[in-house]
Image 1 (cartoon, one colour):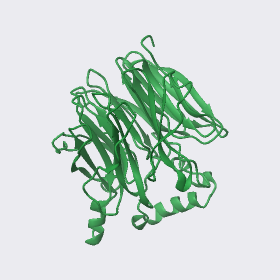
Image 2 (cartoon, helix red, strand yellow; image 1 turned 45 degrees about the vertical axis):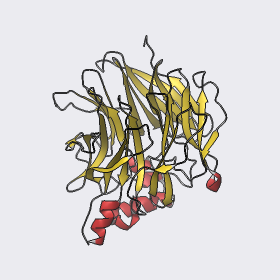
Image 3 (tube, helix red, strand yellow; image 1 turned 180 degrees about the vertical axis):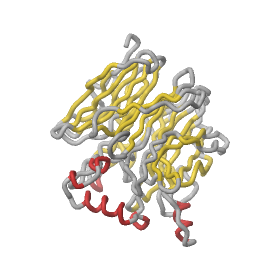
Image 4 (tube, one colour; image 1 turned 120 degrees about the vertical axis):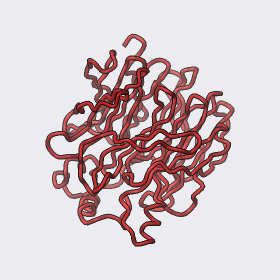
Length: 405
């Protein structure tokens, strides 16, 4: 969120939350972001290697002593290796921004993260890699060629079937340029870079679209052709905060954006809740997102978009306190998870389908009485897993599905 671009309605919401105004004074969607005082940065990313070992990238420590850390578990999360420091740089791991981890075709370990420079969301997208199974890591490099001091944040990373690394992020350069010209510019922009040599070099910066929401994470998934597809909250004119998607080309050409949600949520503010999507083998796009419209149609939503382009009716998930949903697809299995606060504790709830989304069963997956990060789903060789970090319990990994689910 760029404070110098904030309009009065947006300022009121942000200032009310910062001042510790009662949550009931804010709209329902803003209550999900509400909280007095600074919270621990508990965002994580997890991935599973070919041997079944779970690897987690996180932020450890506090204040100026915080660092990018790597841990692993060979017993499905029952025990973890000591947190190993990979870089002494500052790192963001709260809200919609968290470090990302992925594997290459030869077992390389790739980690991307945002190095904050100034507030709000001014930073650089950084990248490190290991080519020896995690024994050593390269020095951090900046992914984007643009080096001005502006927003480069909320990065997402995916590796395609050919081993190419795609990193997409929210970028403030075009908003800055418009402001310098005295022109209005809604939101920020989506850019990406590509590496075709296992992270030794990146090519970019390639623009996907102008006018993205300022601080919602970008969802990345591979479609049935193996192409990376970006899904993000977009600012449609005049100020509709719905979603759009685009296929990211390895050569730097992104497809024209396609609208991906139709809530018509008109709000001049960023809800800090990005979307997620995953593709089935038949091309169906399973998608979850947050819609903050008060009344009918608001809250966490799920829909399955068929390849023919037909528009399904969204299905609401949970109650009015549901937030921060994620989704994963493995064969005919579709899993959805989200956070939900009951006034005392926070639970991760879910739904699991074994028939491509035709029928579902409800799941209660985890619970904590303290602070927590956002839940994420991992498509692992053993089945779909939930990864969640809490202040009280630490890193938790729970199976959601398996071969017989």
